[in-house]
Image (cartoon, rainbow, N blue to C red; front, top):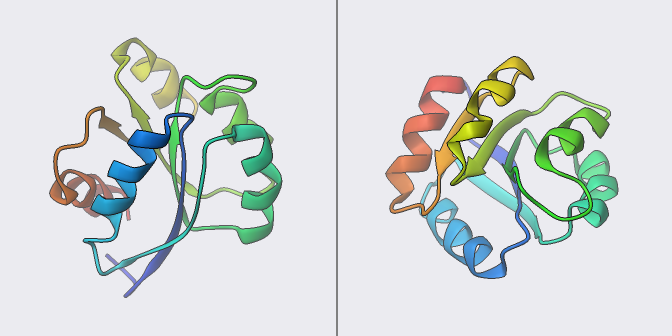
Length: 119
């Protein structure tokens, strides 16, 4: 990794999953969690203002899916897609998604392993 800390946000419509993901992120000293959102539409405006370096993003959400969310951003963060639906993997790779984490997340090391590869 190139820096000491990286800012990040989490976006997932599942509140329980957000709590689990938050607890794992908080175990990693080099991640600074700025915010978590359960509504992708409300997150879009705030994320464009905050401009976190890393976005942990669910693919399947109501109103706007993860792919449309990334396309709507006005900057290019590192995007880690979170999914239990691996059929999206090929589409995500074509759209330039940086990494993937499968649900359920079992450990902070699972997050760290992905970030080491993409940062």
